[in-house]
Image 1: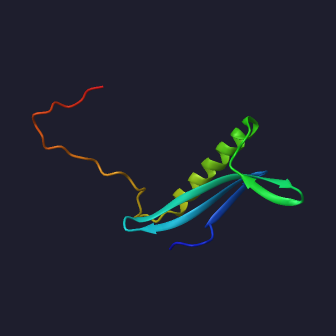
Image 2: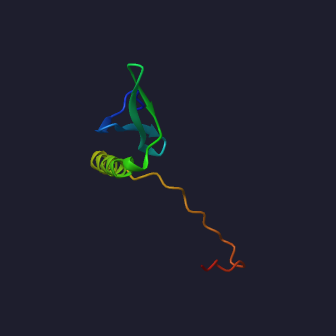
Length: 97
């Protein structure tokens, strides 16, 4: 399922979020790329820096990317998680916070 194209792009002014879909032994998963675009010497360029004034737009874009992923996830797919390590050593008391 790996592709050289994103499955979806969200644009909010100069803020862009691209969503990529991948496959692994554990199932399909998504990654996002976030960047801002700007014009320099007549050419469009991008970077990963945002000003304080971009933060609300950036948070909206990320929330919308999350919603897209949740709406396009196969019902059987679950987000990848790190397996829990289970200790069978009864001599060690549990750690309390």
